Length: 378
Image (tube, rainbow, N blue to C red; front, side):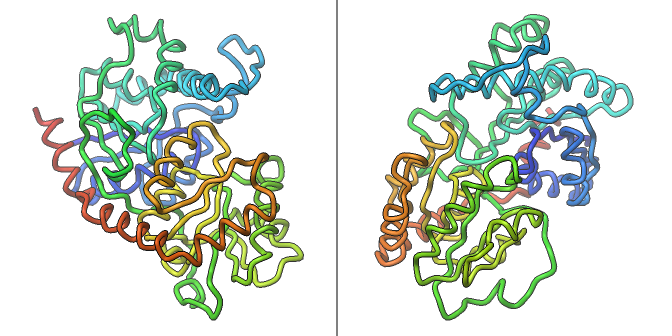
């Protein structure tokens, strides 16, 4: 069977699909993973065939409309989420020519698309094959779907659709306890942390004398974006008597850790280091949050995108995290106080471990693959 996986335009959108894609490859199915040109090394690094659908990056689709006119990012949270959906809609439209050329020689039997990979729905409906929608994290807001529908109105009409179609199967990574109210039926799947690895050193899987806190702002940190946020966050956490691990791309590691004591910085195998940590402090990225959940580690969340606020509130309400608003309540005293609360109050760790047990109880990717294959076989 031929299975095509369609990711977005950032590393996190690739990481989430890798466990199911690897299961498909290991089961003997022809498995391709499509994404933007910039993501080709990321896909190939996992030993999967990588197919480029556009030479433009994700930020290109958010910076300009289809006529090449510059766009401004909305400040209103709801409109911001719709704006993201429209950007991913433009990516979906731009991906169709390459996908259709692929189908001339390699026609998939089923298309698996990430949560905002709207091109998967268009492509699958054009071919008349099943479409599987696969979450990337704890869930994207419905406003993003509405924004994509607006952007893709002509493409959808060309397929005889008045809006985005319902997927033939919805694969959910978010644990049941944290799914948003009113969430529809889903095929649950165990979240398995997945990211590029590196040579292990003993400290990575060994607890030290001090409590260990992981600080990160995600995989997209560079000198143009998020570095100041990451650096400031590390400086605040450094006020505590803890060991700090700054998980960030190697090219900005020295800048992120400069002048700080008891700090290790660089690209980290977080699936290895995570279980040795006592606390995650981060930007509330979906993949990072799920990783912390899966490892039973309490978290201090500072959502830097509107779409991260809902999932962060649900994790906080569950009792496994606390949340601060960046720029409003994330001063040194607030960060240090929340970190101490999370480290010293065992209830947060207990709840985090309960959530990890719930995640471990979900079906494995190999089990979910059987459902996907059965769907395509019909």
